[in-house]
Length: 256
Image (tube, rainbow, N blue to C red; front, side, top):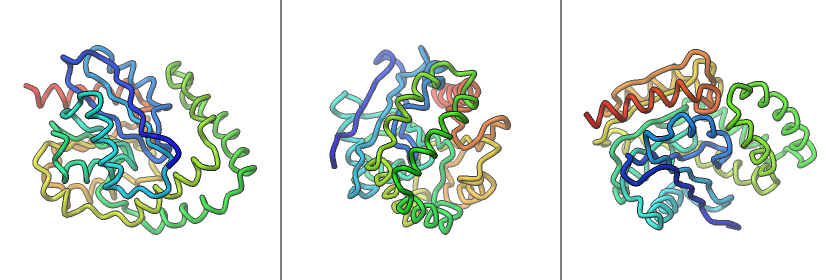
């Protein structure tokens, strides 16, 4: 491991904490618009994972707990995005962080197409750094169009691109390996806090119709599963205001 798990906190201590566990990319660079839409309503806690090639999902949970404790955050809502949903389950099982509720965005119990995850893991390991550079350059052009309505997300895009190094690719491959081997169904069936799920309609990465079926089957605590029609897998980035509105509605509903 070459770096530590990083934490940024936005908002007053008096507000309910919402802890963002990022997806496969592992950082906070694509949630600027979502963060802005939440301002003044929650204490938004952002994480960036270390680019570790050895951590298990339980190690991720331990790292999150320890980093949050340094900032005096021991309770609140967990917001698990895609890969981040796989960190949520061991956090809930360990019960050292007192979760008020869980919101999954593009999340799942076990990935509905694990063969696809293994295929992407293999491809990720074979892509050369020069090819990765070309892919990222192409992605940057597409992303500037996708996030054109969110100046905050656009401002984080350069940081997102700069973080995509060879080590970052290896860390992403390792996270894919963890996803392919993960089946937290036993934990999900015992969850005793409210669980909500949010995704975009256009999601080939974690098809919502399969993920929703699995959540209903394996997570009795699931309260609601919402689909934002004009968003994709990265629903927090492509529909930040709609996603924030829904998240705040769920949090307010539980508080009342």
